[in-house]
Image 1 (cartoon, rainbow, N blue to C red):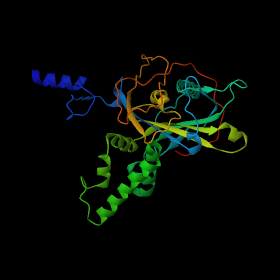
Image 2: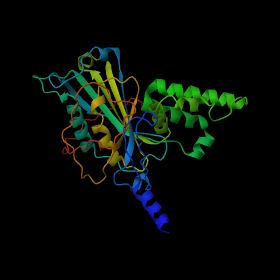
Image 3: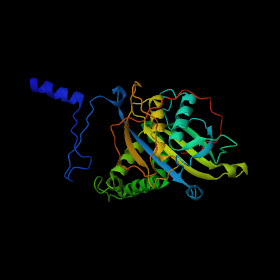
Length: 325
């Protein structure tokens, strides 16, 4: 009886043994973090996030902003977006609070609001947010094409066009081989082999199969827009797992954690993990971007995502630009 109670206690509180952060087999320790409670009941859940910045040729010609040479912008909020089914599960964040978090994070990344004539804008930023949910089993059975389109659209949002297209080809090749009885599903599956490429790819695939909340920030050339030309410079996309999380709980930490990626090109999407504090007791100091070096694709941390404590700002100007994820 005593042994059984001890086992239950260990499972309830989780077991963590931490050594070096390098994988087992390389002369290091290991780390196991088991949570008995579902995410929805955890006070400090660790949630999966991804960050991906696509840069155009025009954007690559610009110097990355710094503390000594910040970039100045005007900003507009787009409309909330929803994709898939069952997207109205939780109330959205207050738009004024969301805007305040976006502005504070941009400032940490050395993007400052324009103040003409001293600091005229060189960028026009448009951001929008929302939820990308899956298709339920009944709908998928009736219309499998719609279900696949929903899945790959979410994969594109999370990991970009190359990632989504690679996954699509792997799944289609598996389907063709399965139809011809040439596939023994498992280790010979192209989709399974894709997951073995790296831990980062495995995490991206896992998140693409789940519902996510997202924010997209797009930068346009201000001078070109003044000439009525639309020149995209960069687009930063960020997502966070919606499993067991309300949008109001996870969107602000997601935005705050995006500072190192805003306007800084990533060759591939960057999956990371952050803890979110539901009760709001944890407050970190001002965000700071120390350089343009990208974090590791396999970054995982027990540190909380930076929380935003700035007060509400004025409601954002309406904007009808809502590019697809």
